[in-house]
Length: 202
Image 1 (cartoon, rainbow, N blue to C red):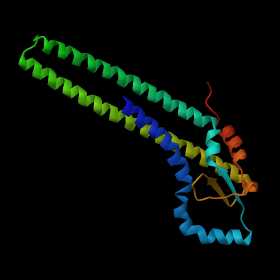
Image 2: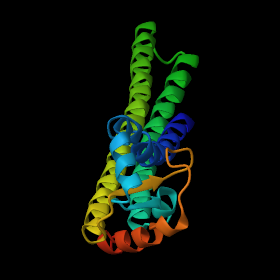
Image 3: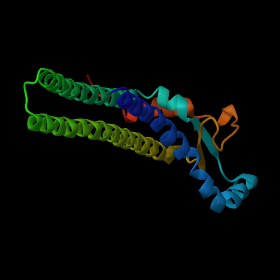
Image 4: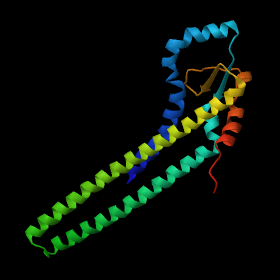
């Protein structure tokens, strides 16, 4: 049970870092190999405009993102409850088998049959725990991709009027190491994305 908690909590925490930070910063490195000279030319000629936003600030102030986290937490609780019930049911059968064996209430053939049944149930529990962990991992990744997609949709809509040549995302340890506050659009992104993709109604 503890292993399931560790897996799920680890995945949920890592999913945000991996998909929101690395997605916006790590992959851009590959693109930079092809576009760095072109971007430098645009900037040096003064023909382009640049803006950036802080990913962590956007996510920590996006109400829909917290709804997504609540959904995952609810799903986690549901799976944990189901697994706990199945585990308790298995333990009762183990205790019942031990009682019968210790008191000589079953034959050797029946003992062997009980042991095989309990071994199969134990393996089923192990498989179930793994499946629940994988299920939470997949759901966490999918929901984070959905949030990334919404963020990209907003940025595209936002930039239809602003006409920035480049909009970067800033995250600690990412490719963007410094940004002048004059080009920081974080507050606008937070306000706009909450309006475009609001939290779900209660």
